[in-house]
Image (cartoon, rainbow, N blue to C red; front, side, top):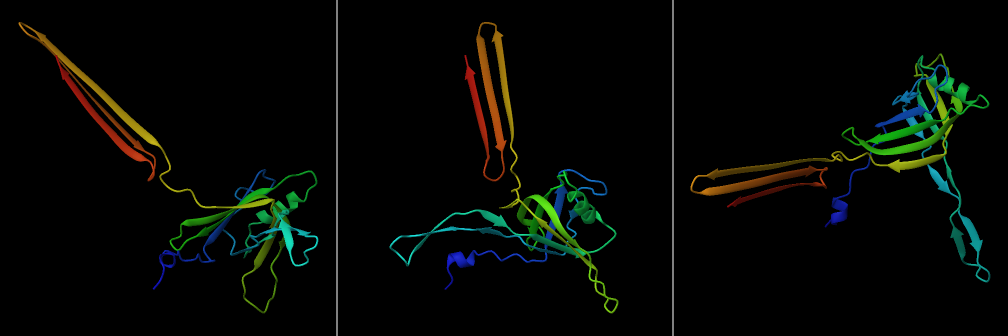
Length: 215
């Protein structure tokens, strides 16, 4: 008999449904933003490694203590079918110019089975370090693949924003009164107020109030 945790386990994502977006902080000549948008067919190098500091304990040769060390990130490798779009080549040429800072922000978005955004890898200060043209062979009819390698300063993993996160409110207030004089006097006042608030699935509600008085 399965446990509740196993029954509620979500299916894993597939590796073929993803998109890559690179946006430069400053545009050199021959490049426009986004420099690429979901054009790559292969992506690898989304990894981070912590180098621990090992401390030996005196008098205990069978135990070691570990402390947090610096975190390093992998080298992202992107591959795609080559076309007349030379933006990544122009970016590499501009980024290798001394005194220039043509870094980019990168988003690698994984999709779920329904094609919706599921997980987003956000890369900061991406810098191209290698561009490779396709391997040419007249005996095969394979697609020409070009490759881009870049390094990045930091990587974070985020979930897409949940829908219905907005906030809205409306309120109404009404007062009416009447009086008559002719042997008798009367005064009637009534008031009503309505308030509704909507802020997504976790914040919603309404309030209604009515009051009246006779004198």
